[in-house]
Amino acid sequence: MRRVSTPIRMCIDETERHRLEHQKARRSTLSVARNSLLLTTLAPHISWVLWLDSDIIETPPTIIQDLTGHNKDIIVANAYQKYTDENGKQQERAYDFNSWIDSDIAQELAAKMKDDDVLFEGTASSEKEN
Image (cartoon, rainbow, N blue to C red; front, side, top):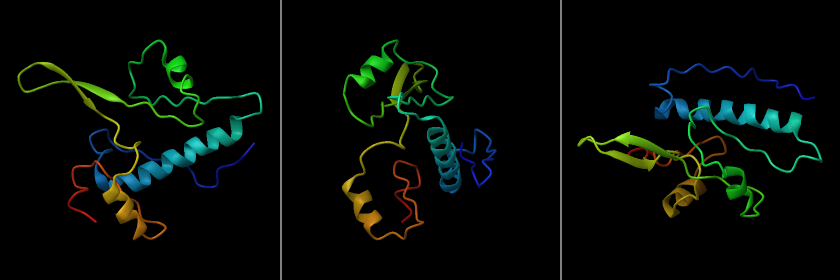
């Protein structure tokens, strides 16, 4: 058993949670919670962990087979969001901008950052801020 020394409590209204100023604290809280869950539940007989966030409402019935079929230690599925465009037509767009390989620009910026700095690529204001 492992005790988390920092209380995990973060209440952000859904309309506010994706704002850039909340990202460092929000993602830090999620990381602490997920790491705590991993450290307290993983055992030698457990091969895989699947995180499905609460806003994931639809997955293929073969998601486990699809992901494990790649035979990778760590793999992340692309998340898409269904929406209605300005013409009333159903569309899909990429939703999860938190899990991809950093761009060359992000890697250059990261090389100049302090240890406690965080880079958020893919947010509306990320191109404006350094």
